[in-house]
Length: 73
Image (cartoon, rainbow, N blue to C red; front, side, top):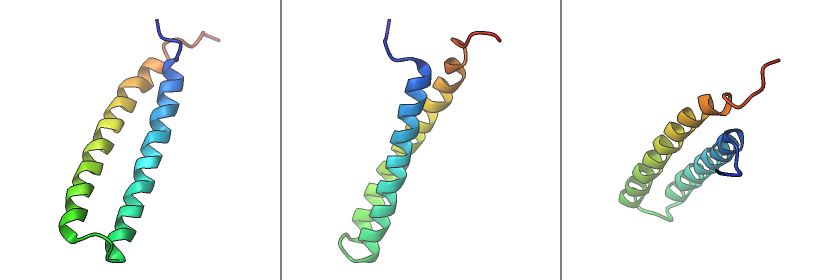
């Protein structure tokens, strides 16, 4: 059995998703300032989008499960 609760996993996934969004913003800035080419931007942006979908899917799976361990009031 894992020590990490589903609520903690959801919180971790929220942080990971926010970090991914921040990285995507930095990617936009890098392209706008000419540090990377349009082709590099598209390749990396596609990977970021894939990771975002994966994180979102994991969060949607974990969210309902995080409420199952809650005690009734």
